[in-house]
Image (cartoon, rainbow, N blue to C red; front, side, top):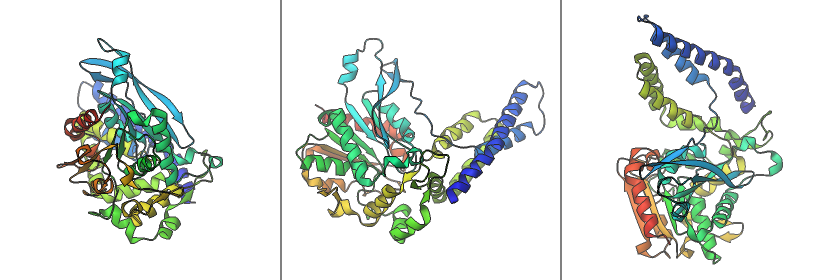
Length: 415
């Protein structure tokens, strides 16, 4: 019922959002064209712009990576779906050679599979990650589907299915030549996927880059970790799961809705978000276009959320944040024991943010102890100073400090 009410509310607010957008644009145009200032015009524009932001529906953004700069050349980029299941697309970002570069030279650069989080936001949250890597890597991304758009006839999606998807995509790309990068939540299923492949004697990735993830959420627990421990799994099942209503393709599917996740995200830093919207109002009022546009870009991404299939969500809470099965050596995927000690050939790079309030420092670094079979010369850890959770993979700290370290590690453990 709650989901249906929320969907109805969104539908009812669309006309207001449209009127607010049109009014703000009209007032802005009037201000630009009039030869004399009109008292209150800019304040009115700012008010209606804010109303639009508060009432609009935030759909899935696009990656919008049309080109990338390589050695002074603007290189066109296009997306290509390499493989697809009901719950995920494996997307390649293909670069077209320009100037002195050749197709062979581009293809010879390292192949990186970026496994995006399935924890509320769309894979487009990693836009900055992908664009930066594209300067010197061939990049592939897991683009997870919004569960509300997956028909019930396609079955359910579980945490085991996540692991199997990672393995499937590694095999498709050729695991022996791929560098696997997991951002936040997927550090756990990615480590499991590689562990199982190693135990079977399969080829494993050249390297694993595990960034800000809850491999052992008992270490330096954050508010997110504590919330998971304060409630038993039945509380999450009773209070957070809802059926997708019509007219969505996945109507009848039991999910953890994106709008509830967004509420949880915002509540963690409620005052910060309130201040951001207030600043946006004054930026529009005083004509600070650059700052206002930055706010719009950020919240267009932040407010766009997806639904997670109920079994996957519940298993993640229980196995990762309550029972810590991977860290305790007690996790089985489809009957196979997950043993990170089986990994011997894959290099390991762990990255954490000093100020991460989602996955506390130490939660990812523990992978080094778990992966005892990897030689020490193939291991590296980076604690990014003055860096929060999102700063690990987006923003100037990522571009200027973390990405170069990733590039150096990938090349050191290449062919």
